[in-house]
Length: 192
Ligand code: GDP
Image (cartoon, rainbow, N blue to C red; front, side, top):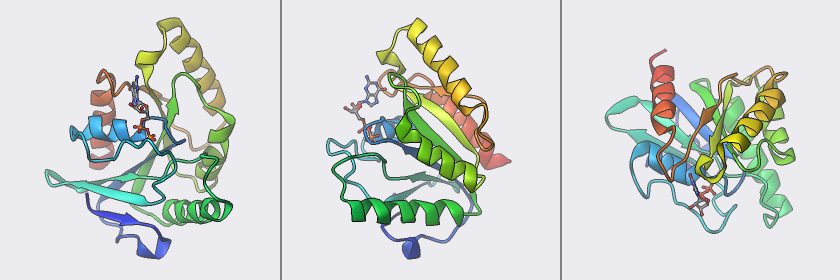
């Protein structure tokens, strides 16, 4: 853990390479960050979705050039309007003003696929031309043929989106599926 910023003015200096994780509340973001880093409690798995309204920075002493950034989950109805506005502004300020941010991993629950709630985030990323890649979560919850259908839908929904990276990563934090692939993708980005 390095830093938690609740305001754009409080963001740490942009150093090294950063990748960020985004997605709707409850998508499995904390679990994935924990699985990825092999640290059970690094990102808090939350039973109160929408509670964390901060941009959280993690670093790995073994890879000092690489930062992981946990963006607050979006789409939680009980978040007040004002908080939603501030939250949006914080994300926008972070995303638009971060030259060392090389990719945003946009997490999508494999049971739901890309939903209405994800479109504003994708619109924003397309607008600021930030490379983003869909990561399906909780694939242990769906049958193989369901996953095939969801994958096809996701591919279709990103096909006309300019900043979307075409490859999708399929993960299950519960079973460890896909974490190696995600880790390799991140390390490759850090070396580019
Ligand atoms: P966040 O709000 O996006 O950070 O989501 P969490 O990581 O807190 O996870 C939300 C809920 O989904 C929790 O109850 C987790 O136990 C569950 N969950 C997360 N990842 C997986 C997964 O890979 N498989 C299954 N079956 N459940 C998961």
